[in-house]
Image (tube, rainbow, N blue to C red; front, side, top):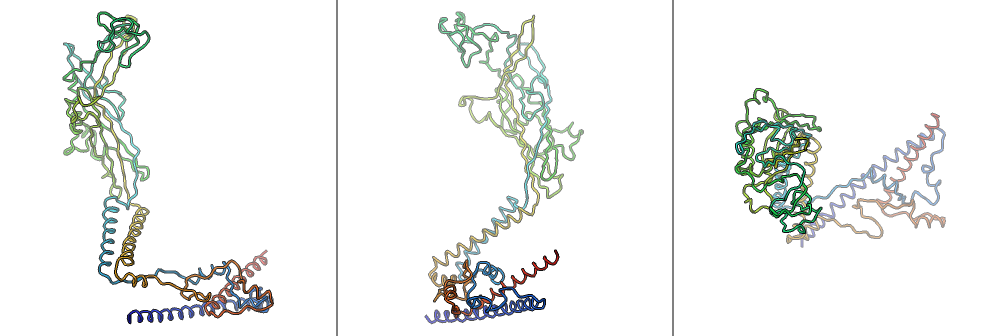
Length: 514
């Protein structure tokens, strides 16, 4: 109890000293403003002009305006702007548990800022993605021997399309149907079986069929007759082993160029040291030759997790990712591509019987004329579809994201203050004592504001209602007993005087110049 009384008396003494200091400061400001106001009055009198209305004294204004509180928004705003400063009140709390909690939280925030924001996410750098172009070229020769018929396949035969795009197909197996011409012929067994012409509705077709039905049932095959390219294709039996196993030795050349427009940097996968002599001999290897742009098709399949024998039969899709992750804070020559290989579909871990659709295939026809009759050779192509994907991200130091990251980190430090305040004010046994130390309350007595108040009363009129009534009755308003209020009033009047003098002086100068 004695400790609480001593603390209150100590607080009262401190508050008294603060009030005296504030009054002394206001007196200094008041004397300075009066001296400046007197200077303007003397200058006006020396020039033979009558001072403005606000500087003529008490007799010039009705109702003793010098004894009233001038509480206009303009004067209060000027007074607050020039003569007041707000700062948060801080309380130093000596408590081990709260101190340890605060430091642990701050340490965690600091580790997050340094480890995650700056080191891992590189928050001090700006980023840009590249505009890229890809050109490809396949090389190699394939050989087949089907029923004693030998044939050589070159790039024009097994690459679709042949233009060298970033997405293309390399044929590894096929089913060929030669000599087709437009006419009528029976469907394959199982496509559309029939026992009479009534089962074959004329002009209709099945989604899995080969053409329009003619309304005739072929008795020899017991299938409906269709108008189509005849003979129709029979793709029930896929060649196994694949006919073009030699495709494993084909080579793929990738030429890629990227441009980072924000940083104004252009790069090619033919980096320093990759010249014509090197390209003529190199073959890509992730360890020995990671920058060589020539790839063996069998190695691509292996790196993507497939077996060539498995996917060559029915086809698959493989993605080659060219990764450009560059840091332009160092020399540009260190910006080099990295190649990654991914199996997109045709996963060998799945059993073919468990999947509804396996592999990759499409049909391709070569048309020609024979005895003035249009014919075609139909190929059902099974192959490896290759998609080349360019992935890019460049970074470089930038002061704006650096300050943004630092500012956000400093803001997160406030979490420690919030948590510790919650512990102090609501969890500790002495929480009432800490509340009294942290928060300072002021009471209003008799309409007078405490000297500790940080804001002036802002009224939208010049005089209060009591002053207006007194002026209307021809009596002066009673002066205020609050010395702080009187000091504020005189200061406001001085400010208004100076403002009016300055305004009149400028107007006079403008008129003289004209």
